[in-house]
Length: 400
Image (tube, rainbow, N blue to C red):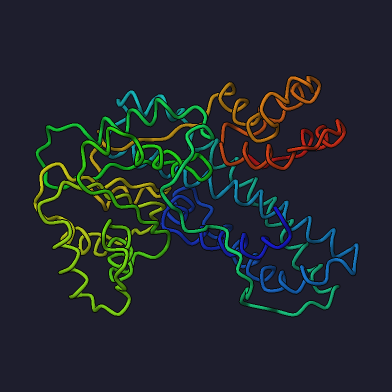
């Protein structure tokens, strides 16, 4: 993680600690107070990160402190991702039944007592390390800066373009989602298909592959792509949908009232079978979804909403049917290696460096099948042919 991203990463992580999924999971496993302690200490540390990043070149001790902060925050993110995954597992099993073959394949059964003890130990360890870092921050005379004035964000707004040659191991997933979207039979005017899973799995990339598939072009008269993220305020979402609709891109909807926006959007959708992608949905307020659904449901049979989300609650409030919930899995080691080679070498260059390729295989094993981790690590090694440097990456803890 680059130094300039640490503050933004901390903000994002603290926000995830406050989500309903993590809160519910922490209460269920009896570690809520420990997680609240973690969040509070992170807030203290986050307050001085911007000043620390500005001054770290002047002090080797401060640089070491920042590296320790990165490691602890990364380990804490593992716990958050674990809770999100566990919450999704419990939701799917409780809602759709453990008899589902897909559920059994995706989730291994876990012993709640063992899981609780393991998580409690990890959280206690992180809280101990955070407490020391919080005390140590006072040695450097750092100022509290609450807002990052730089144009740096952990989560950028997404778009629908993708180069399929840069994607590995998702052809089957794409075909399954396309089938769900183009199939007839439920006779609904609007239905929701959700791609769910932890961060870094490539949910957005998969949605892009689907969005650009020729079968989708043939099935839907209108396609729209909207990156929602944390902003599910009705007026803003309506503007984003209208801005993504073809032939309306020349209009400025920012000055429209909500009433004008809903009239224009319903007029645009009327009589058209459409696909609307809502990427990176975090909204867990059913009222907001129902408000949007009432507007976009214009009674055209076969129209679909494709959602990508980490939140099990989001899939629930959007009334995703069991058959329409697609739980995205990690890449196989073979596909992970193929993706790693794509980003770590020029075409065919890996053949010239067999030693590095062997080290690369060991690195890929530690990436846990997460495409984002594979691409990030692979890109960091591009055009670097020092064996020791590759071994150093191999021997790092990736925190997954």
